[in-house]
Amino acid sequence: IDLILVYDFEAGAVQSDGLRPLAPSQYYARLTQRLVTALSAPTAEGLLYDVDMRLRPSGQKGPVATQLSSFSAYQDKEAWTWEHLALTRARVVTGPDTLRHAIDGIIHETLTRPRDRTKTAADVRDMRALIATEKGSENIWDLKQVRGGLVDLEFIAQYLQLIHAPERPVVLDPNTLVVLENLQGAGLLSAGDSQTLKSACRLYHDLGQVLRLCLEGPFEPAAAPLGLKNLLAQAGNAPDFGVLERDLRTTLAAVHSMFDRLVQ
Image (cartoon, rainbow, N blue to C red; front, side):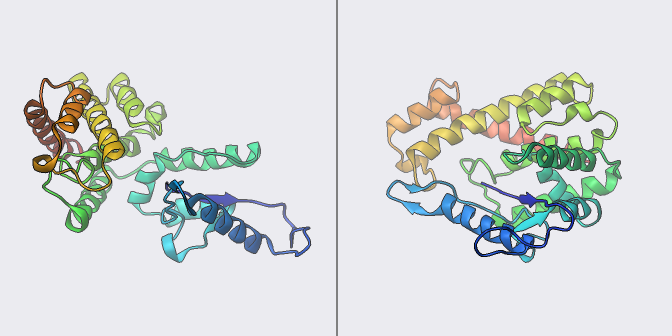
């Protein structure tokens, strides 16, 4: 789970009011560290969540918790395009109403800022190439990293939001399937492209859920039991595993082609 912790406090506040008073930044840094420890502590049933804090402003070099004003300034002046791509998926999970509304406002303002389409497309392509170099795979069952897989699909949806949201903020939504519906409804994505991407998204997620529930490591078809292959075929609405593999290859190729065509 990717987390960003944002806090705020009244002007003039210099320390907390507990038994061991702390400066606000220290207080929220320690609170965040305890939260992450609680979420990721090993239990008899395994980890609750594998917490990733690298999306916070300035990444691993930045503080674990960020003051609201700093979060706003970072998104306005320093954040890279890939960070704004990730911001399209942001959900404010919890916090005081006033803080939640303020964060939502910053996110909305950031995502509806006018952008240079050519530069944004180049940034997205560069980021995708970097991911392919570091984590790329030719295994069709690496549903996230293989070309035409989830990374390509989500980059398409995120890129289209960034370039169209300034004039059509209705396209924005953290859910990829809803985004594709919104883009089609706004006339920014053809019905055929929308349907292809939505079908691919459902297929990848349905297959991915089965694989995560049934396996701890990578899926190797040659060594997989027949029951698992049949279950995957059922999840992919295919009559058998062989047809599912052909359908998956076709879908991956279609999404890869659409990435090249739409992200420009």
